[in-house]
Image (tube, rainbow, N blue to C red):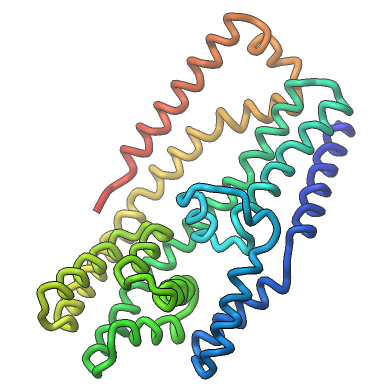
Length: 312
């Protein structure tokens, strides 16, 4: 037990050291200055200089290639580092405790249990932060559309109303609209910038707005009246989603517990009593049982999610 505690403490220490080495307070300060400059828009030359400095100063490991989807996942979770830095921290937090455990204890099963646990924890944190931001964005979108509609009726352009939303509303919708406005300043089209917001938030109501804007731009018409209809539709969809979420909360929790409990018990046994699981990893029958258990676990979890997931 003492060796296990030492391994966990060593892994946490290494993770904190890596985080401190990769953490750049000046990068966050530049982002904050850019956000304030986007709000004030009083000095274009200084704004362009700061944007160039921010684009050149992306921190360590900026040359590590990652997929666009993974990059959007990090942005959607609002992790204050670039994807390359996150990958390095993720790898160190996974590998170092595993090596420390194997060297100190000499038990491969226990080391694998700690490695799998350390690998899963960052994924859980990112998904939790991303889902929380998605829910907040969905709740704020209706109010943002009201602000945009009122601005259009007052004679402002759509981009100016987006600026008002980024200035007056809280995170995450203000942050996402600020990113979209910055992309437009770099020459990205309005539709493409809004689609990038959709890729980060995965909000179907926003996709409906983007489609309506594209149609209104091509065919003409009163955009404010179109947005009024969309706003009412989106608010009604949000209300229905809240009702469905309330009614399916028990089923979702049951799916989480039923799907996660076997994995948690297995990892706990791998760490606390690895000898108990040795027959599973050292015999042919054990290997077959592991494959069958994994397949049944994935199938059962997917079925429970299908039952409790209601698409609107």
